[in-house]
Image 1 (tube, rainbow, N blue to C red):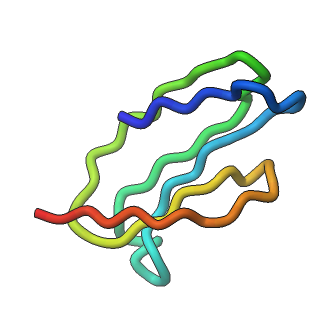
Image 2 (image 1 turned 135 degrees about the vertical axis):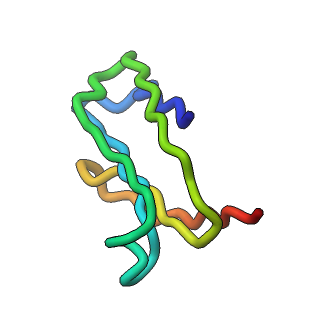
Length: 70
């Protein structure tokens, strides 16, 4: 479970976790938006081993890496 909170951004944010490269199409992923300031949302996903990226598609943030090992 990924718990995401918009603590102090005055517009809606989102969350997107996906695989890297072509793995994006076969690895588990999760996304959602509507995170107004002060709102917290949980995103549940069962991840398989591999490399993932997460970011906010509604905000100019970089892609952050996440590596899942067995």
